[in-house]
Length: 174
Image (cartoon, rainbow, N blue to C red; front, side):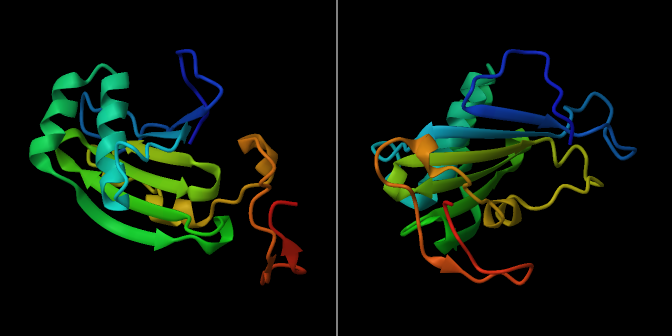
């Protein structure tokens, strides 16, 4: 993926675009990964399995794809993976869903203690079936917060000792 975007990107978002592949369909959208750090939408989706549907609708509206956002309610949520992410604190949950009608995959990582949703959205995987992009659940499992102070407040995130096979044990959040 390349960090190549032609529009202003807010501070709470990163956008990465994959180089065009040989298997891309003509006139297809480029394979694009968005990472958004947002206030947790607890009032809109207290049930974790509804998080991807809510955020998918918001993402599509942001991108002026309103008709696709409206059609999601009829399509429903195709949840493909739910994970507990102990390394990211008590109750940290990742939920992944695919929305075939709009060629969108969404993974929402809810950090309960920080009241934050980290939203990974992948646009265009269906139109580029030969892409080498990993599954969003795999990306979510690899997340590591290096500076818990970014979330404000006194809570600095989990501090339990983590054993790592690639070096000495270290404390998360430090």
